[in-house]
Amino acid sequence: MDSPRQQVHIGPISLFTLVTSLGMAVLAVLAVSTSNAMYALSNRAAEMTSELYVAEACAQRFVAELDGALDQAASTGSDVPLSLSGQLDALASAAQVEATQGASGLDVTVSAHMEGNEVTAVVTTPIGRRIDVRIEVATDGTYQITQWKTTTETDSSGAGETLWSPAG
Image (tube, rainbow, N blue to C red):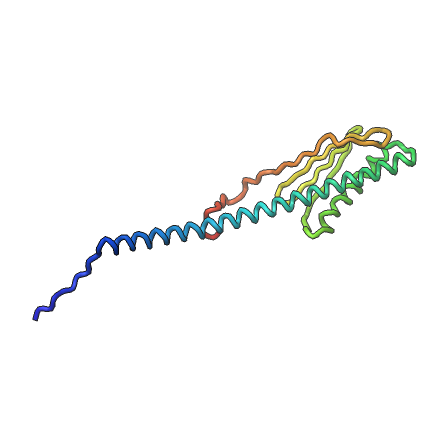
């Protein structure tokens, strides 16, 4: 009793279907990986942009506080640069409150110092955004902003993470 053996024949259509299925699976994995990478990148961009806006608000608040202090010193007739130098810490603290009172809750630091008739304020954020503001103060209580520079400090201490990792 010989039973005929049945052989499986893989024809060209079956082979084409197999290759197409494997190709579609690879493309699906790449699509998921790319979408995770773009999601991570957009979250980083949103965080950096939010911190920049908070830092800008703090710097503008510092200039507004400085403007009020200069106006008050000029109206009382006192020596403007001398009266301003004693108030810089209070002005920086008032500008720093801008970040903590808002919805951001970021730990932004604001520092200011005065050399001659030039006030320099530095606003830094936890991610490394930094705004340097330089203001020249005249003896009559007017001022001119001579520098408003935004920079980002790079942090190379990371573990070398990559956007294309499967974990995202």
